[in-house]
Amino acid sequence: MNVPVYPLADWRRHGQLATFTPNRKLPVYNWLYYKEGYARDLVWTLLDRFKLNGPLLDPFCGSGTTLLACAQRGIPSVGYDVQSVALLASLVKTTPYDRDTLKAIADALLSERFVPEPGPVLPIMKRAFSKHNLADVLFWKKQVDQVKNPACRNFFLLALITAAMKGSWLFKDGGVLKVKKRPVAPVKLLFKRTVRKWIKELGTQDLRAPARVVAQDARHIEGRYENVITSPPYLNNIDYTKVYQVENWFLGATGTPIRSWIGNEGKQLPLLKKFDLPYAAHAYFSDMNTVLKEMHKALVPGGRAALVVGNAYFAPLEQHVEVDFILSFLAEKIGFSIEEIGVLQERYALQRRTVKRGTIRESCVMLQRS
Ligand SMILES: C[S@@+](CC[C@H](N)C(=O)[O-])C[C@H]1O[C@@H](n2cnc3c(N)ncnc32)[C@H](O)[C@@H]1O
Image (tube, rainbow, N blue to C red):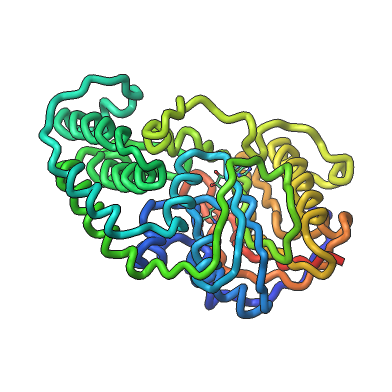
């Protein structure tokens, strides 16, 4: 492909940090399993390596890793996302809760006696839960919805979502939600355990600066920032509204696709016409170009942005798309200089899930606003 080639730095010792895996062992960070997330230590590494002090923006904040990692380092931050469950997780993880208030509500809530609560559920939920667990979900959702304090209600709602997902037979396989029956604990038990555990974990939350969570499309950025650390959606066909439909159901989301997804609507960017890109990639880069322009506007002169991105392989066309290079090319045209492209990890590009067709990398593109 005819894209300018940028030098790559080897950051592969940070490989796992491009994934959510290390967060799974960290209190508070692991309050919602967000497969698309990255690790706390990636954020801390970037803050140290590039001496970033904020105020900082994550325009695709997902489950709130950047916001919590910044808050723990005393850096104020703002996060945008368009998915309900991501916004909820970001908010709950960065809210300074009073443990005694939560304990008192938990004592009252968890002693409620079970009564069956009918209610509309998504078709997939009937396959994803046993009859008992679905009844538990409906009962506990009704109790949680009645918690008067909105911040505390959010805490219990996120705990219920996490408990319910553990008590379901669902698993996420790439962009597809699958059901596989296996032994699972009762949701009632999982919920009670989760609430008690999280209240204890609040002792390690250690918030030293505020984080603001905003339901906003990253293609429109407001405010001024010193830095951006973010990971936009990858160039693939994962529809977050499908994969997270059950989690979003708890928040009243209907599961219908949100039109604001990056890469949803295709128009060709004149700048990229000369490149041989698959059709779907044009929609993605046209949206990302808008995001880059908005980031440029929002950053102070000299401000830095770190973008964690993954390259793509279009199997039917046997075509590699070097997302890190193309975004760098677009960013340069907008007025950024490319400080470094750090390769975080490489994996095989697979055709029909088995045939290896070279490698694709995940990298961190470091930009500086001129
Ligand atoms: C790769 S994930 C970010 C994960 C995050 N770094 C974490 O650790 O949890 C990308 C996020 O972008 C969000 N997103 C997709 N389109 C968006 C848009 N137009 N504006 C803002 N956020 C969007 C998705 O909901 C998803 O949470």
